[in-house]
Amino acid sequence: MHGLFNQALERFLRVTHGGAAWQRIAEVADLPFLSFEPLTIYDPAVTAAVVQAAAQVLDRPVESLLEDMGTFLVSHQSGERVRRLLRFGGVGFIDFLHSLEEMPARARLALPDLVLPDIVLDDLGGWEFSLWMAPPFLGAAFVLVGLLRAMADDYGALVFLEVEGGATARPVVRVQLLDAAHAEGRRFDLAAGVA
Image (tube, rainbow, N blue to C red; front, side):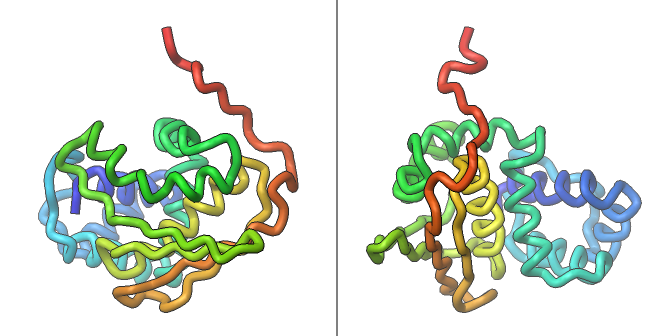
């Protein structure tokens, strides 16, 4: 597992639950360190141990914890770069969904050793979609659900999201777009930050 993901997990837990909670989580997960290095590759078992320890320490279901992390990755101020990268996927939420299959290749352009799981999108018609990915760890589909929920809000879309298969090795995320223009989306300027 790439250190960037583990570092994002650590940042999410520190920001939303505090440094003391993170230290306790690191103890329960039996980490030999207190902070992840972003460019280090970790065994996926380390990520799984941190997720399980966080659920235990915070007394929360793994699924809701991971979904909150996915939302945090996009909606927190520290996630503005992730949000911008995702918004390059299209002008509307459906365009964004179709761009997800290209995301692993685009990410490798920036970080060649970053291996994101392949994502396959099936358009079922009637604004219904299914997403499948080879999760890098059990429960990763819930991170995707949180990310999709935050991006739907970003685009102003109203969606229904559901994970079928739970924390299995082959979960499917069902996406139903209920209203593409439910609310005013967040402003996005393609040229923002360009000198």
